[in-house]
Length: 354
Image (cartoon, rainbow, N blue to C red):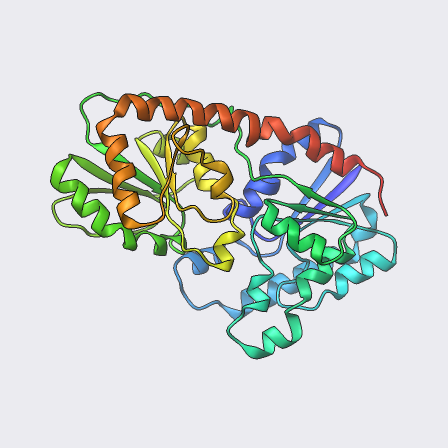
């Protein structure tokens, strides 16, 4: 069986790497012939993460390259689409696949529909606000990373909706050894774009630093908070070293705003921390509510006072923090691991549909 994956990014893009690339070798071992075709390349992603203005030529090249791929789409038995075939373009290609009987699976790990219906430009909202609803409706199967996205798919009239969380490979994610004489490390992993959620916790970090020997570690942020009298480690992200970086943490944090975009996130940071046996603290927003089990694998924290109290508890009770980390790893193994969902993904791709 030949399968083509029309993904958004190369392996550098988290959504494509986690929802597609990390499964491809497993699909091939299951007898599938897999072709992965990213829309954007690494140069585009580098500009995105560095917040530089997009080079229009890179976008034009991406559209042309995808058109060439679509010209041969009927050579494949299955078509897998990440988010949409063309960003900021009507759902005509998806409609063509539908009416020709080709069918496709579409996958979402973010509430990308809000990129249209909440867009600051009125013309985008006017012409494309219902674009993702159409993509979902035309799809043979919609795979949603959480219940928030799944609800949108059902509301859009999708005939088949499956919820599969974003997962980690437990053969890669293992617990690390902690050195006894070290500062308590509060860690975060993400991108320069999502770093925006951290500055609000500055008063919390400053208050804790008065009483405890703590360290802040940031993976993939490209910068720190620049707090005086506090040790900060800024760790460059790479797929090869992200696990060893997380293993240095004593707690992994995921602060969020309570807004429409954040409610569609899949809580992947939390899953990464837990996969490495690290307790977690996160904002009680969206799927975080499900992933975090208070007092078992970590804590939910809404207000700044709650953030300070939860971190204070883990700093003062390191043995409890380690126990929570162990329980978190057990939860990930059962509910958020590649090994737990691989058969379901293979079954979706092998299933005959129109």
